[in-house]
Length: 223
Image (tube, rainbow, N blue to C red; front, side, top):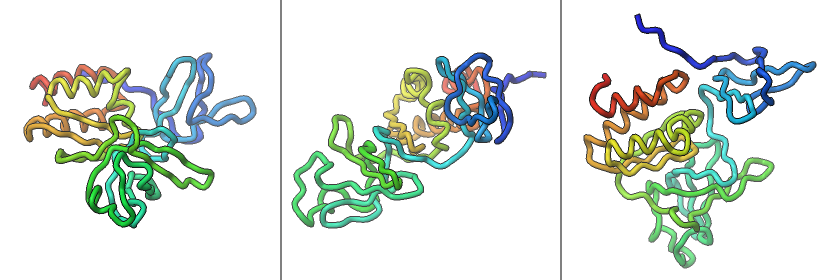
């Protein structure tokens, strides 16, 4: 029988042994000991012990790249769903086009998908986004899927290794938003294979040997 090696999962309030590391994200201190805030996975990044939640809402942070959907239009801005608890305005001054007053629908319409960046988040969690940087754009065609935002880092991999493996194996263009929204463009059968690989990562993000499992699936050897 195969024995799978899992990353260590902790529950909220469970004491965490830092093993000589510094406390990082997802921990709180009480009387000199450290406890998990989340139901999550113990993860070491550099000199820090972090707890990565197994699920959760996307909380926007400045400079995050996100994929959003236009859900409303006003004369000077668009309202964008970025998969967060609140919507984000995109002002005409934050797009790469010169948009006259009232002409917003000529450039982006309801239902359009965009790749944008979080430009600011204030104290009361109001969010602003921008498209006025190289690489930010309207995304034409393709297919959108959503994953838990907490699994985004695993889908991307160290230095982009995991997502590059999927791109090279499927010949798909893929953008992964920090908000858990992923855009995939390519031949229909390749899109489906890319989605299958991403769902495998999402499902088994807490296991070891994940890269080998994904490589096996992409090569046709996996189930």
